[in-house]
Image (cartoon, rainbow, N blue to C red; front, side, top):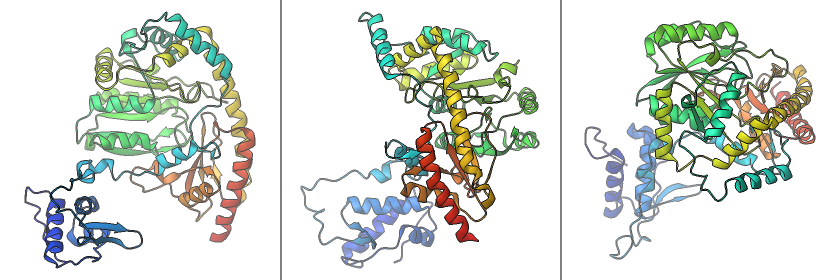
Length: 488
């Protein structure tokens, strides 16, 4: 089938392709039942992106000229179509309207987390804390908060966040050596939202950002969706490797550096004091902001707590993101950003545009628990439970060491980053675990360009009970043993 594409034309390429196929169908050159080339093969044949072919075929499907048949692909269905009847309604071509970047995203990470919502699924993927807050007490506290408002529409909290919570956050920050004023704190729902708002505020299309690798997909995806590029820097046992950072800055001119400083996701590593100092030195030299994400720093099992980059910063160059998602009630997410007042004003303005209000009752509950000390008490309980669950999971992992599995026992946080035995693929392990109702995250997801991590998986030990960890790990050991034996 000959299709001519004019890349200089103002007519979108997918329209050109769809119109020419349509003409061939109507003229009888492509009779009813004719099979069309696959998306990938057609894209290669015409030298266009696969999404262009998807859009062209979607346009033809919307006009009921072709249909997709399982096991066959796309085929002509013109004679059974009543499209040209005068009263037939025309459908919107949604595939053509939705931006490519929102249609062609890697879904594996999200699909794993959707599975985690199933109570029958054992989740080694979900970064949630153990449930230490008693439900009856939580219910009573919610009622008390509602009664305290006296019918006042308190859900209309300030765009910068509830005043009482910001005051409590300022006190909490002092425990981390960070001094901040009320106008330097922005309350938000979670770290993903915080990073999204920072990217929206600071970056223009085409800008670059330096990030770690491996890194949470939530980080590189928000950068890509903004039309920007992530420049990756490797991570070792001391965190982000800084040896060639200045050369990268000189060549790429990034707008900021993103770093997950404590119990890094996915490796569990901690940015050393020496590298923290080096990053701040580089930030000062190039007048380059650092975005520091620090959600897991509270969950330290053995380490002396290191000062945050924000606490060490004397130039106000560090934007600090903290989330209570790992230390509060599972499912009740709350985060904050500490930054110069000028940036906080911009973030607050963005909240006013995108949200009617922040989650006011969670803000009130968190402020209440920080004030009473219950938050600190339960954070210590969560840390203790996490330590026990880490030890249990690592006992099982040790049984796989003779087969070639290796890992660093995490000194805090919620994740174990495991290198699989030689020849064992993380995606294959994740798929086989899923068949048994266990969710784990394959390592390649944490590499933006999918150029590494195939021999790794990330496990979470904080969410499940000890009994379910035992059950899940016994099954996972069987799977990895079977795969490793088959490769030898």
